[in-house]
Amino acid sequence: MHVGTGIVYQGIGAGRTDREVVQRELALADLAEPLGYDSLWGVEHHFTSYTMCPDVLQHLTYFAGRTKRIQLGSMVVVLPWHDPIRVAEQVAVLDHMSNGRFVFGIGRGLGRVEFEGFGVHQADSREIFTESAQMLLEGLERGYVEFSGKHIQQARRDIRPRPFKSFRGRTYAAAVSPESSELMARLGVGILIVPQKPWPHVVRELAAYREIYRQLNKAEPPPPIVAGWVHLDDDEAAAQETAHKYIGRYYESVVEHYELAGNHLRGLKGYEMYGKIQEKMNAPGGVDAGVDFFTSLHPWGTPKQVHEKILELRRLTGAEGFIAMFSYGGMPYEIAERNCRRFAAEIMPKLKAEVPLAQQNIASTRPATAGAELTASA
Image (tube, rainbow, N blue to C red; front, top):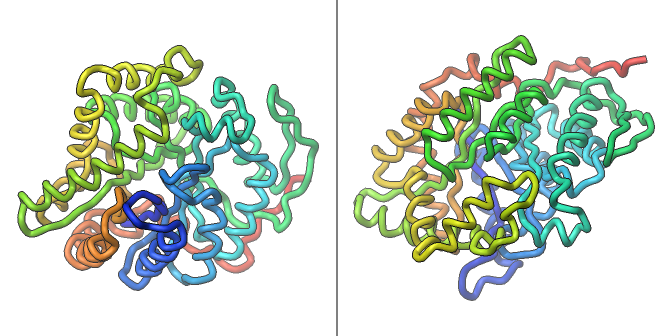
């Protein structure tokens, strides 16, 4: 398998300053390439301590200059919050600076605080995402952008520097609802899975996505990538206690940032599934039940248990990539770093043996051959 790690700059934890969080997260990210991880990922969020990385492409460009081998992934660029032509330019620059190591993850967003902060009507997010994604993906292949839609009007302009390598096969989208999975199939992109709902639901939606993808694209869809919150301990009981504490705190921050214990998503166009989640969260004991359920989805335990859980995720989803998250929920950085190092030493070699590098779709993001620049269409 392809094995990566993600950095989220989560600003929760008693006594932590934003400065400390940024410096410690950067230090943790610097371990990824020396320890042998295949990729380093970042997220995008705004305005709260939930995660403090408002520009994931800036984060990845920084590490493009600090690394030589590792692939660099966005998890994700939230398209409705951006001018898509600027994203196209930033992506092209990052890909040149990293010599083709960028993996492009996109999404449409959920947080009301973020949509309102950018003055974007959340009810329009699916339409804006669709138009932005279509313009971006087409533009990155042909070397120029041009689009006429309901929300986006873009005169033809060249992307300079021109993309030098295709993004087909290395573009993924975070999809949670069945409707989103269908949309991603129509766009021809892969699926990035952050575990948050029952696996039988995920399996059914992946099957529908694959069927639509084959029909529309006349090709096999790329295998998905799965992210997971990881904690290791030789003592199973201690692992459970620590995982529940910090993964639980992370999920509580999810509930707070997205206002999942509110009611604003009920009836909001495009967010019907989240409206149902709000109903569950507002029931007696709903948040506690949500914490227990979310924690159960992730790979924590003894090294043997973590390895087996990730293999089960691969069996269920057909994923060829796993992105391990080590720093979350105010966890002491000493524990996060220990998990990162131990996972690399004891679990990662076994996972890499599951799918040889030459057979990995995501391996297509390895540096391009010199002189492989794409030519803009006339």
